[in-house]
Amino acid sequence: MQLDLNLLTALDALLEEGSVTGAAARLHVTAPAMSRSLGRIRKATGDQILVRTGRTMVPTTRALAMHAQVHALVQQAHQLLSARQELDLTTLDRVFTLRWHDALTAACGTALLTAVHRQAPGVRLRLPAEPGTDDAELRRGEVDLESSSGPPTLPDIRHRLLGTDRLVVAVRAGHPLAEGPPSVERYAAADHLTVSRRGSLRDPVDDALATRGLQRRVVAAGPTAAFALQLAHDTDLVVTLPDAVTRTARERLGLTTLPVPLPLPGIPLHLLWHQRYDEDRAHAWLRDLATATVRALFAPADAPRTTAGRTGR
Image (cartoon, rainbow, N blue to C red; front, side, top):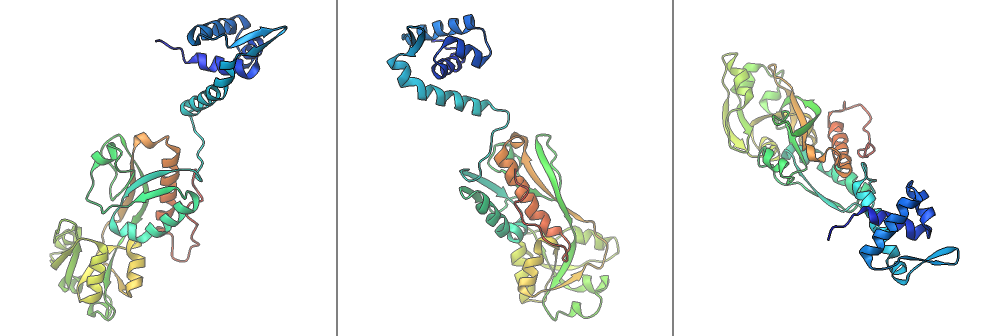
């Protein structure tokens, strides 16, 4: 059976107004056009819907029974097809998956969770261990937000630059390298630890040292920044890693932070998502909240920190 769903809107107006003339004015159509719509509704439902009583029209028993349901259906259709739906954070019930670098999760995961639950208590976050960049998961909608040190290469993946980090050296308190300014030669001569999920014993620091004719000795590779920092705390190993996202963890362990004694490029931090979420207001709220939370990491140490979540939309 072919149904013209515009008849629902006409039926809603007829039942709300109780007259063909009133319904026509409500929908900005002519009275004859509304009368024809009433005829089609009568044919589709097998019911008169409105019957004349003297100078007025009254709804039939069936029309009265369907009035509330018809009105609700029309309102739901308007909301579904609305260009921009209103977002009620207090009733939002949704699960978001954020695949972030472990150091970034450790640095601002608590602040983000607190801000999310304060504004939208029904929202739940999944923060899985980062298995490496996989644009297919973003495309399939299995990951809502991803952190990356570079912009995406695919046109359907959106990105936002959150900040640019710098590398620093972390060693235990009293480490020999901390005795006086660390020259590049003393730095290269120390025993080092890299951070690599794949166990790589080499990273861009080695390339920078090679241009100066130097080579460092990397004795271990740790899977996470947290593991590397703990190992640096417990041994004489030297770890070189991003400053902003590991600052809190270094301070908590009482590690000594030193500058890297050779020029290295900054490390950009990007937030990635699929274009399907561009107009998703709940997703836009979360990515704005995540942006504010992460960017607070890059604020100067003496600058006032803004409360994450005041930029939500």
